[in-house]
Image (cartoon, rainbow, N blue to C red):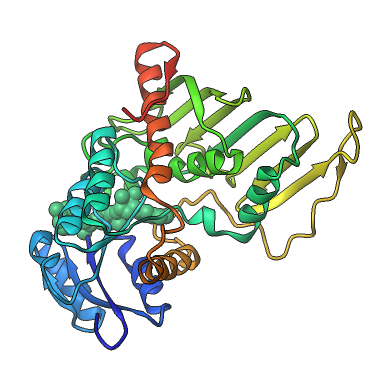
Amino acid sequence: MRDGKYGFGIIGCGVIAPTHVKGIEACDEAELVACCDIDEAKGQKFAEEHGEVAFYTDYRRMVEDPAVDVVCVCTPSGLHAEGAIAAAEAGKHVFCEKPLDIRRESMTAMIRACRDADVKLGCVFQSRTMPDNIKARKAIQNGVLGQMTLADAFLKDYRSHAYYASAGWRGTWALDGGGALMNQGVHGVDLLLWLAGDDVESVFARADHKVRDIEVEDTCVACLKFRGGAFGTIIGTTSCNPGETRRIELHGDVGTIISTGNKITRWALAEEYDARAADSTPPADGAVEDGATWDNKAVSSQGHVFLVDDLVQAVKEDRDPYIVGESARKAVDLILAIYESARTGKDVPVTSE
Ligand SMILES: NC(=O)c1ccc[n+]([C@@H]2O[C@H](COP(=O)([O-])OP(=O)(O)OC[C@H]3O[C@@H](n4cnc5c(N)ncnc54)[C@H](O)[C@@H]3O)[C@@H](O)[C@H]2O)c1
């Protein structure tokens, strides 16, 4: 820590790294002090563009830098755990991009490493920071929907062939860990689980690459059974052209709440038992965000600003960050069960083991 500011170091100076810089710059108690990339020219350029911060080609060296207090993990998804574990073992806090990792054992290991080292593990799922989603979750936690019957996520994105060709790890099992669901759809899968406030017990799914020349799925449908008894669906694709705004729909016997592009677009609750719910959707304060992000570089920094500041406060107050590892892994555990079901044609229980 220098001049009352926590020093941040970023591993992976690619597409998402500038959004982390915006989050760090917006926080009075944070400062970018180092970055790391195996691509020396790219990382060096990034370091120069961001105040001549220290540059490393090996993250194991960066995490040992005494100026680094917090490590942002912005590497390909299948490398998250190794960066997080190295940071934790060096006594540094971790701020990890979504998905937490792509393997159950890796997620378990990184969560354990952070706990054993007594460092914080803050996770990125920026949809959870949006005011309308927070409002919806609180209401649902208070039971406004009654008995939940259906919880659905419609995640119809577009990614071009050029997108998949833009980095060698994209669309691979080894480093992306999946396709439309594990990379893009994981935001909506996480939001579905977080809003429903329930976990999925088992899934039945179909997944395939319909139009892109990739190993992983570009299109997936899954049928869910929640522990609390509700059913649900996830429809996830990167091959809808031009793509539709992401929509999460939650229904109970007493009402319905729908979040479209992170705005509440339907709020209908019944006044009394067995009555039909009346619509009282609040007027939209601001346009519905176009959640069908065809451009992976167009990530708003609002969520990262929230989450970086939260992590700094969590360190100062010695409390849990807003999104802890145990919670962030749920979307990945569910997606892994969906893939297994699509492979085997069987109903698959969702587990973190
Ligand atoms: N929160 C969001 O909305 C959001 C948006 C985009 C990406 N992401 C996530 O961020 C992560 C990175 O995605 P991206 O689009 O920035 O990828 P990218 O390919 O643009 O950048 C990754 C960088 O990591 C570097 N790298 C690879 N292995 C490394 C290693 N061992 N040590 C140091 N650097 C290494 C690569 O050279 C590359 O520069 C992914 O997990 C992705 O899911 C999140």
